[in-house]
Image (tube, rainbow, N blue to C red):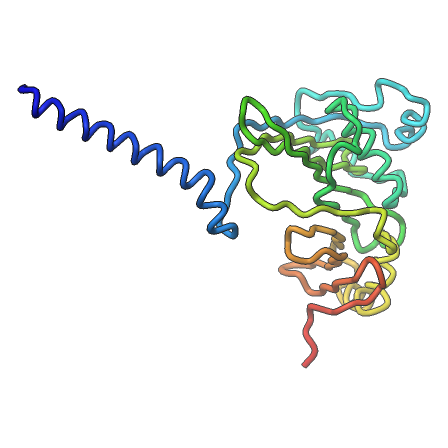
Length: 260
């Protein structure tokens, strides 16, 4: 190969490399800035774990600072081994106390250093107004790891039925999306209050039509486009009732069924 052809080949390789690097930079940074709705963070690591709890004594154990309140399990507790019988009546306050303690136990960091991103509760219709049997929470924070802006995420589900907590930790990169947050200090209507409002304005009437063979979900998930309470009742085969409640003023809007 003569020097002229060698020079052309080198230029082509350099150009190809520049295009590849430029494309990578574009999709990693400029694309997210130009098209924020299509920005996406990729998981670079994920850890899933189960922890056993004793619902009857858990809150006392936490108040006494006992170290064995959360016990790591090597296998899933769900299925025949699960208790499937709720013996406690935890409301939002109790679930949040457990959530904060568990989060700090797993991450060994104050929960105040993280941002609450999602909060959800569940209860069977025949146990309505007696607390919740499940609570899910998701916290996140952004920090620089190995020279890359990284979003650390901790999502976990506390089940009073299965005597267990499912914990999922993720690292997402690059941290380019806009994640919303839940400000608990501003919320004036808690989960129990939202359930009462929902019951008064259609939920109680809806669930009794199916003899309470249904499940109720309450959630605050700003990332979904609504930063208030979303209360829904699901019975086979679909969601039959949904109401949205402003957590600051108590105003409500029935989403389903729509008025004719």
